[in-house]
Length: 450
Image (cartoon, rainbow, N blue to C red; front, side, top):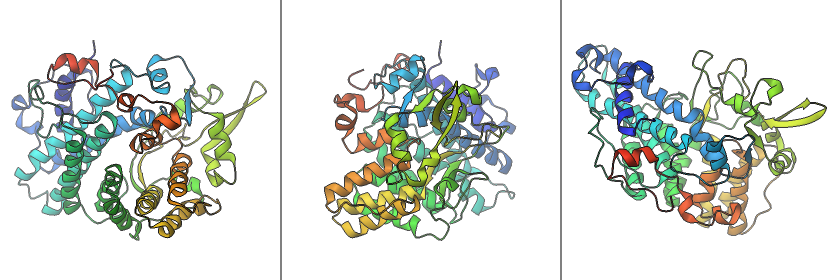
């Protein structure tokens, strides 16, 4: 039987404290009050380890489950297999006992708990080996990571329970009713505001810095239809000398990674592997070919007038005499160190383009859209009206982020999932709360329609 969220949060408490992932010997976790003092977050070493542990929890849901929930309900990719949990997502027919939904929800709350542990413990640490600047950085990272997770929870499930203190017993999270989506986004904004004041103004790309907080805030404001604010924060990121669009297009996802286009990504290594490539590569290349670009997307990416250099997202091989095309964003099958892409500069240009278009700043919006198109080797847009321009930006995002966690959420936030995908029941525009968590906590309400 799968474990409930609140029991797994206990595992996360121990894992984040030790800076380790949850493992089989932690199935009966000890509440934090009973942990030996040397295993709590009490000094520089344990604080640093706990921060790495929290990144590891975020990495866990971004490795597979979250990207799948972002691209598979859209129309760029189909599931090329028989596993029901993937077919449900592909066909927009999710159930509350879907394994990927359950895993993603649990992983996300484990990450929240890791951040909560840091936020609670760091102010009380007095260790000469932990200078104030580093303490502020770790605290800022915790606020940023909690903001990222709650933003993803909010856009995936709507309003969710806002757990803002460490879960130290299996009773802590119970009877915590769901907040609204607006309240969830309010918490994201509060965390990002705090993170921006604490984080360094640096160019680190696999740990949070000020620009990462600003980039996520630009995305948050776009989702909330606060277009002036979205434009402001995207402009701050675009204006930083630390970031630029790289050419050719494929360069942003080419080793050694951490390109100047990356605002925030989650890094992997051969010993801490990202196996996402395995889901995209055909069996002849050692993969399972679970995710397959649909013919229309292959045609778009290969069209010089639409995809341009983004055709590099595709690769081909001959199998049994036939040419087979597959997704190539995750391609490091030997090294297994493909990163998970969270925030890229290209998105900031398209956020600003959309925000400007919705404020009737059409020439400026066209310039931003054309910046992304020019990088891809595609000619300038032919859109002239606001309506044409918004559709052009939507279609540009479809191609630019073809295999990233983007398309489904774009169509939901703009209210176009019914028109484009045929998902006309808006109750299905959010994911179901996992069944096990509903059983574990009677105060937790299911989303309507499930």
